[in-house]
Length: 79
Image 1 (cartoon, helix red, strand yellow):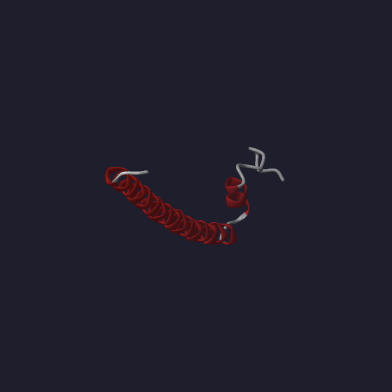
Image 2 (cartoon, helix red, strand yellow; image 1 turned 60 degrees about the vertical axis):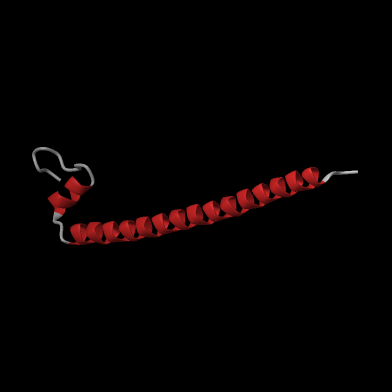
């Protein structure tokens, strides 16, 4: 029914599909790993920035706190 050439072509096609599936899986795992490591480093940066902000706030006087908030004291200094 099927000749030898047909079976060879079918085998080659299956080998190509298997190679594509394996490479797709490897690329997916590599991408997932890259995203997870990026998220971890961003989380560390956010925590470090939070500590810096806390230190700035704890060491600030009234004027510095208002400056950190974007300015909340009147120009004349009345409060």
